[in-house]
Length: 243
Ligand SMILES: Nc1ncnc2c1ncn2[C@@H]1O[C@H](COP(=O)(O)OP(=O)(O)O)[C@@H](O)[C@H]1O
Ligand SMILES: [Mg+2]
Image (tube, rainbow, N blue to C red):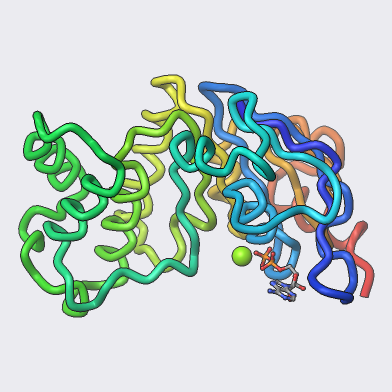
């Protein structure tokens, strides 16, 4: 369970970039933060992952306060950021082993878990290649594998399908659906309205640091009176965005 309550964020003395955001994500569901570049998605994800402190408000994950219980939260979440860089000289095999050791995962079953994870994403043929030789999509799939290595109950993914082709993107979204079905709590951010529409149980439309509407894609269409979710998103954006 993720509970975000009236979160505000200001970087140094600049303007507020997150202006009082609240929402709850229940286990077994996928919540999507949908908004254009600059809306505040990454800032919110980083606050949830304890990497940034909110200026005001609280984030609670499985009952732990993200501003205080940072170590507990690190065990509870799988976090994927758009900024993560894999060591270019390492290999998928060595990175997987390194992170398994970092998380103190049991040695027993290690190779089986790695094989299953690599097979799922088609990483196996590239397992011993250097990261620098791999495609963007392959690197993204390796990042996803590693972010979930400790089987966390809560998954926080910032723009998980960025830079992926349509097939790789589908592999990732199918996997997220499966994880939700297994009871994980999932939040992802995206600027792609079709991804939010097809994947998320609830969508929060983020414009200029505020959630201007939330609900299922159908509920949001009813709210705006538009026929498609695409028109709904543009309507919500133009109505709420001020230069
Ligand atoms: N480290 C930072 N210092 C100052 N401003 C920042 C910093 N990171 C992001 N911002 C600003 O905060 C706003 C929201 O950015 P961000 O959270 O990255 O949005 P999104 O992920 O939706 O594109 C933008 O105006 C951005 O320029
Ligand atoms: Mg971002």
